[in-house]
Image (cartoon, rainbow over all chains, first blue to last red; front, side):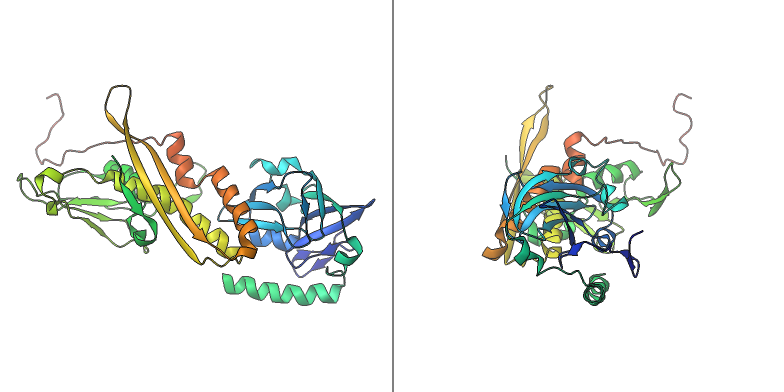
Length: 146
Length: 204
């Protein structure tokens, strides 16, 4: 059962970026997805469009774009590295909403081969107090944006 | 023949061609308009907003130049629009649908672009568009609008360029509501109702 912070799931054992992405270390690779907060704020996700496989991306730079009913927004790399895998069902409108249904499971987005993992991990949130504090700020922002 | 529309300035012109189809569907007589509603029940019982536009012919006579039209969009962001056709000299007399179509082609996509860039926190330093509605003819030889070409000129800070470019690529790949709708072919249905008091059955 995922850990809940307020009404958002934030499973333990993952790293979180302030761009609403999560990162999970798997055998030297990094699986990446959108946080539960990110998917709830976005609403129904219609499509994810990745950069070409093999492309190297720095931490915080754009890995792909995500389409909702009202806007298209950037998905930023929680860690730098090269893009080696993309969750293909996210390309199709009929199946992309698995991000909404299962943001930490079937709705994962990318797999990266990290370039500077140790360094990049230091910029991510893992501590529950830190996450909670950041969430409060994000909720305020969200309210302000309406 | 070209018709050029500059996006940033004519925001309220829109809903236009699709709107025209709807309004003509509702158009039931010269100088009159029908009550419009904002909510319509759909088959799945969900209430969905359906734009309904009223159009009135403001003319009273059969004289040339008496063709002004008033559109009421029933939308808070769209004030009534007067189509002031009577200002045109006879030799310039023509429809204005292409201008509306060009506005339609740019407004929907442009609004989506701006909304997406803003939401991504990308400052938009400059933004303007130009759309051309180009004419051609169909297989019967009648005039049609063949294509609408929109050119977007924008400037964002250099360090956000890559991000902005990817967002725009995504938007152009999937299209906007209007480009998808018109591109696949919107059905235009028209119906008229005689308002003559003594109009009996058509074949009596």
